[in-house]
Image (cartoon, rainbow, N blue to C red; front, side, top):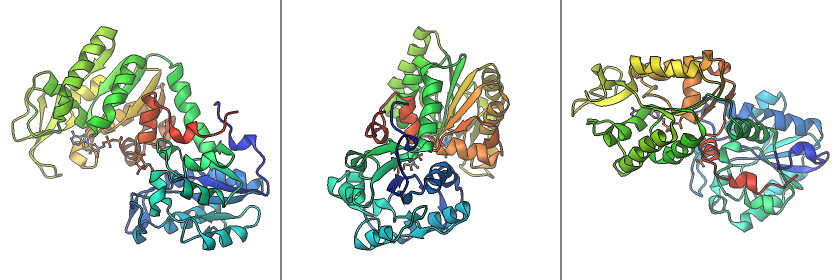
Length: 393
Ligand SMILES: Nc1ncnc2c1ncn2[C@@H]1O[C@H](COP(=O)(O)OP(=O)(O)O)[C@@H](O)[C@H]1O
Ligand SMILES: O=C(OP(=O)(O)O)[C@H](O)COP(=O)(O)O
């Protein structure tokens, strides 16, 4: 990596402002998946061992510049304390006199979690004044929030222009794995793109069409492609504005000689619920009042075969509505194929990672990225502002 890392600078005795991504899922105030917290432990433990004063900042949810009680970082601080096996101080604000006093009270090796930085309107606006207030708390900025690296906000980007700024160990690992895989990919390289956010994934499909050997499409994205080919899609997810773009991809793939695969059969349903009626049909068999909810068994087999014969697999987005058990089979089949292939497997995207966890296959993947949007933008070949702003080596 061309950017300095926390290992390249002196941290002992210093106040270190570490931007982490503790944007974890919560249900009734309880954390349901603490992966993002666990993944920052190497950086935090490194700083503790080196005798730094560790000040952690994160966003949680999208409170839009207001204090929202249910989005406080208290549960994250408590979980971190359990994971570290030591007390962690928590501030009820992210800047101001009370926070400064908490920072002043830190001894070397102590950890303080600031309040949700998105409680302040200046955070998402990348307000230089708020960045300055963050910077006043510390001597060094460490960005370990890969999941938020595509955001140019005061605590991810603005602050990096004021303090010496380096990457954390998680940030370093994410960037190194993704760039190693995508710069000189092992071939055959297979990209699997699914999920529901058609607009968000158009650019990544475009980029991956030039990079990958096989591009497999699944999930809600598929129907815009089917429509582009002249099939009726009933009530299935459809992005009408992107039909021409989808057609363009089919043609681009042909021109480039890429193996661009769309589902050949699908699971359809007459309702979006576990007790709905379902059927398996070919792509021109969707009745007007039914919708496609998963890839069918022939497609699963076809995709599993491609995955098996790959050297590198990048997977972003589930193959169907996997949260509903009768529609989870396609995503499970792809997760199993990824778990069993010899290929190096990278999973990006919160829902694909959640699916791998749900099927108890996450441990068999080579890399599960902590960033959904961030890994997508990286795969699109875009520069990430939270990384760009860090000091060069
Ligand atoms: N055929 C489909 N119709 C509607 N929604 C779908 C379909 N297939 C997958 N989905 C939904 O897509 C969502 C995930 O999409 P997305 O956010 O794009 O993925 P990721 O978070 O992995 O990037 C899941 O909640 C899943 O239920
Ligand atoms: O959860 C996140 O995004 P992701 O679901 O795309 O990985 C990050 O914490 C960024 O959050 P944001 O999309 O509200 O800026």
